[in-house]
Structures are given as C-alpha cells and as structure tokens.
Length: 353
Image 1 (tube, rainbow, N blue to C red):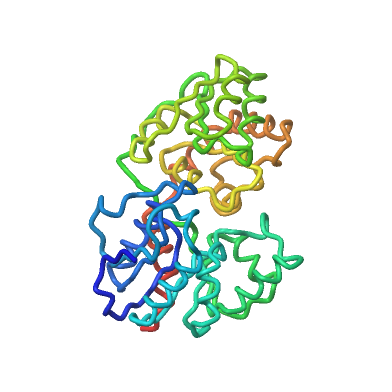
Image 2 (cartoon, rainbow, N blue to C red; image 1 turned 30 degrees about the horizontal axis):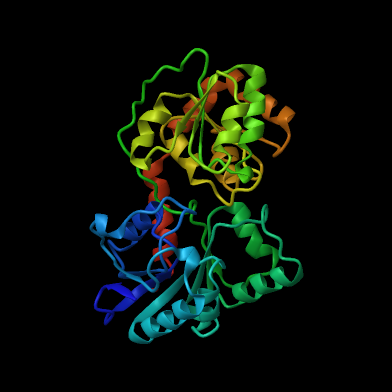
C-alpha cells in the first residue's frame, strides 16, 4: 500500500475512487481548501485521462491501496488494504465513486449508512435497474445516506427507486482545466467541426464520418483507439485525424474550430462537452450523452440528436449552422466560476456546520 499521508488524521471526507483523473484531482483540491480530504485510489488506468500524482502539489492527502494497473489488481488484496486503512482513519463522510468497484461496494455495507455518499455519473438514460444486476445496484444505493448525481437525468435515477436520502446535483463530474480564452474570435467559413475522444465503437465516430463524407464539411477528429485504422480508411479528405493531444494543449485546438460534436451511443456524462463549451464552441450531442439535458438543453448551447440516427444528426448540423450566432452567444454567457463553486458546495454542504 503506497501512502502519501501519515494516516493518523480525522477527515471531513474520505473519497474512494479508482484512478487519478485530472478533473477529480482538481475538484478535490477545491474541496480541500475548506475541508480535510483523503483521496483513496487503486491504481492507474486508461478509462480516464490520468495524472501522475507525483507531478503536482495537492491540498489533500492521498493513498494508493493498490499499485500499478487498476484493471489487473487483486480485488481481495485491495479490499484487505482498504480495511486496514479505514481502521486507522476517521471520516465524517465517505464518498463512493458509483458502483464500479466491488471492494468499495462491499465496504459500504460495513460503514455506517449516514456516512456513505454516492457520486453518480450514471443516469436514467443509460442504467437499467432490472434483473439481478439492477438488484445489486439497488442494494448498494440503499446503503447510501446521501447522493451526488451529476445532473438532472442522474438525479432522476435515484428518484425512480424512491431514494430517501439527501440528493445534491453537482452539475458535473469534476473540474476540468481552464485557461485564457479568446472572446472575439470570428467563425471560420465554412464552419469547422471537431470531435475529441477515444476511437472506439461506443463513441459512434463511424456514423460521424459517414455524415461528413456526405456533406464534405471540414471535420477534425482528436483521439486514438482500437478503431483508428478502420476509421481513417473510411474517411474522405475533408476529415483530419490529429491523434491524441494532451488535455493542457486542447484549448488552442478547440478555438481553431467552431462546433463540437459528440455522437456517442452511450456516455454517462461527457466532460468533453463542458470543455468545448468553455472554449467557446456550440455543441451537437446525441441524446445518449448524459450531460445533454444540463449542458445543452438547459443552457441553449447547441443541438441534440437521436443516437444512431444519421438523419437526426444531419438536422442538428443544419440547426446549428442556421442558428450559430444564438448558440454562440449562449455558450459565451455560461458562468463557469459559478458552476465550479456550486459543484464544490454540493460536496461541502454534506458536512454539518
């Protein structure tokens, strides 16, 4: 067990999660400005953009209860290490990052219910609570005293099963990296489109390429994945592949484009939608992107289309082109300082003053 703390403290929050994704680290840093926090992790993985913990200074303590690849960990050993850790620390609230980890799920049945808090990135859109898998999820949720769903469809998941605990919508899944924006950029002619994400089937990039092969509009695809070779072979010359780009460098790439598209078949939230809006881009997202209600419909920042329906995608593209100035203005009006503040307060409000 790799530790970065003497493990002798009492904490306001012990946050149990999988890997050190940059947006979780940013969120924990903000929470820890006013409340003590221990972040517990079980390795590094490819499921999110991870940051080497040794690379930065943090306001919080952290601990790895497993070293190396999170997907190859021994779950039994990780649970044993978790139990050893939790015998040595005190926490007012224990935050669980969903139901992805058997070790954490099991511990929620040991920890007092009033302490347990579930952060939930999954929503009524993409989660089934039927069958035996649904029964397990219901049982885990029943062990929670509070819930921190990302958005309105995510809160609806808890409402659908009659959750009795307190619910605070966070408005996001973390705090993404922000930088200096150009506020007076003129749109390209024709408009330039961009996708940022992994090149895997669930992201539905194949349909995106099909649409842009037909309309010949300029599209940039940023990211890597198992389908990269296949997608490149399918794409016409108006579609450019840029490979993987570090998150810290994406601001300039976004601002060289005009519209962001996320066509996913399934996406629990989609932090990349927030990033694109921050950098000044109206967005087009599928109705299976979990943030489409809170970040697109509610804010009027772009168009939503039916997943796996290319005609609906084409109509969304036409809508954004016809109403670009309106969507652009709404994008620039989003108050990011207020959104980040409210996200932090969703957590800190759980601690009685």
